[in-house]
Amino acid sequence: MIDALGNPQSLLLLGGTSDIALAIAHAYAGRANGLRVVVAARPGPRRDDAVQDLQRAGCVVRAVDLDARLPSSQTAAVDAAAAEGDIDVAVLAYGVLGDNEQAWHDVETGAELAEVNFVGPVTAGIVLADRIRRQGHGVVVALSSVAAERPRRSNFVYGSTKAGFDAFYTGLGEALREHGGHVLVVRPGFVHSKMTQGLKAAPLATTPDRVAAAVVAAVDARKEQVWVPPAMRLVMSTLRHLPRPVFRRLPL
Image (cartoon, rainbow, N blue to C red; front, side):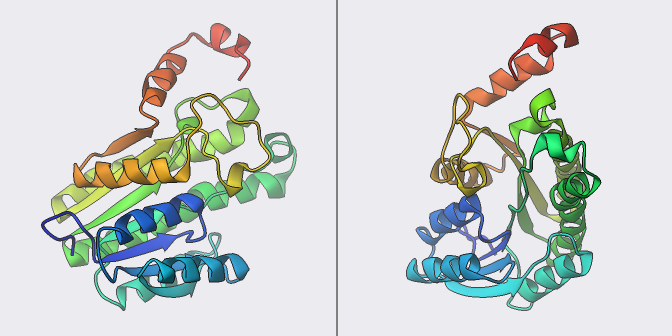
């Protein structure tokens, strides 16, 4: 249960090797001694490193397997976390960026983006919603993207999956309000992370730690949406309302 100071006692990281998810866990670990964290991710060295990193931060950590493309795996991961007690905050952090040109030419690549970035998160959201209704409380932090606002030629496959993700979790927040649940949709711009390594940074690029700080503050304030950095809200609102012939000429 989140205490009177806004500190959760338990955290579920779906996509627990994500740089942003781990930064969020560290931000909460600095506020609560013995934070219980379930790291749900594919087994391997990256997950092992994430577990050890959080243990050094004073967290009580358990690792569980997660395959984003298998509904049964989503259910098992949430059930495993709930077996330890209530899930105060769940962070939905997995996703793939992919190669846009390959994604709209190759069926398997396009399907992977759709399944990992949209179908999997919908499955996880349904399972989490059931858990939150039973608990009567709980927060879901859904890591969306500014790409959800208006898919561009350069990343329209990824952007379309994030648009669906964003719409689902925005609606889920409305559905869970009467059950004591809360959903925060997070829309970061370019984040310096493993996912974007080797890519040219976009304007207003940010870091996992800054995203985490914004998330923690937004959860405290019971916000439903947060843009990181905040200036991205104005930028994307402007782009969203540009006429298509003008938008098409931009180097996006």
